[in-house]
Length: 71
Image 1 (cartoon, rainbow, N blue to C red):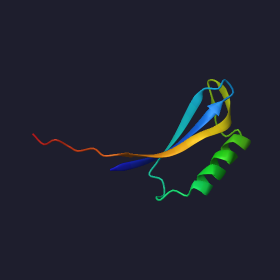
Image 2: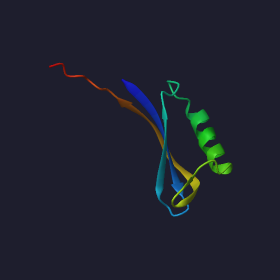
Image 3: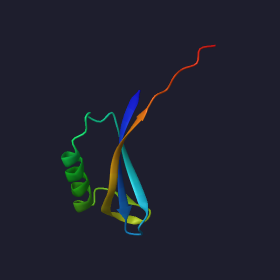
């Protein structure tokens, strides 16, 4: 089982940009995630093909389970 934190932003062209972080601290602190997203936007820490990140859209934890098949 693998968890991934996905931070979803909007860029200058109103396109969605997702940043993914593997193995986040769980349970996730919503206040800390929001503050981190605000800091990413304020510092222009990342850019995309559509320009700088300008707004937060959402954040989510994705949980993926892989089951190996023996043969």
